[in-house]
Length: 416
Image (cartoon, rainbow, N blue to C red; front, side):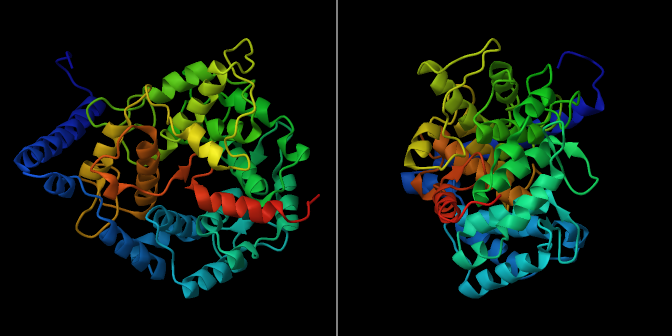
């Protein structure tokens, strides 16, 4: 930085860079001292057992500090079960029954899931509950979801703009719109009535920067950019989106020193964007592959092929996403950041950035980003022992369990 007077944001950025540089320097010294590949892998280790212990104990009960998330309880279940699924751990059958019973108490009779029993049905916890169900792929939990009532709820949330409301009389934004499409896709209730003008709504949320804002004319943001990118993939319609500027914006959010992603321009690195930004890259890589394969293109540099993202995912989809957008970002640098700077190797879990404390939110999205990065590059950082189960980038669910869930619901009668 050439300026003699540093802003507060510049100071904080440099502080994070220095912390990460010290960690990398220390680990480099350890690696140079290793006499075998086995010793090297111990330095670059994913501490599965302590993560599993942290997650399983959290599923049984939470510290008092989580009481502020009382309206986000399905999210907590999703973060825990999603993390366990990537570690290839399944909860005990008795816990599966408790999860099914809990979601049943959160489900409103008119459709939708609330943030807890008796709470207002809301698209965000509905999405979280459906994703938790898909992460577990348990038939008993699948039977909890009332597809007809959920469809009616989604229709009530539909807005004339093409987007969706989060809840009755709630905000219309890109989060709600993506959540509605993802839920409908998994439950096999996606219909023309739900997708009417939705592609146009996504296009209206893209900013001059290339990313997506939460609403038209808002600043581009990593979480909203994921919702827009994955939402377009679910529709298989990018006709209102400039994918070139979108890809450029996402790729430039990877930090040069840290290796992780920031959520917006001039913000600090944050492990959760390993997924929110990182998932956009394999989705867009598939779209780019279609362009090179001769798919149609409109005047904005947008491809109009028959993409597989989020659509009845089969083995071929994993192969298509396996490129992970390599060439536009560094999957190995992201893996290094998550394993060395964010992992709590003593008590389990992942943190936002050093020296922050770990939590369940950052644990799931770190593991999700790590899974995507492992699939997006030629090597698994630290060796094959660190390999996680593959994540579907469109839904944020373990790929093979998503396919099992999609197959289950696609075999059921249609809902109208």
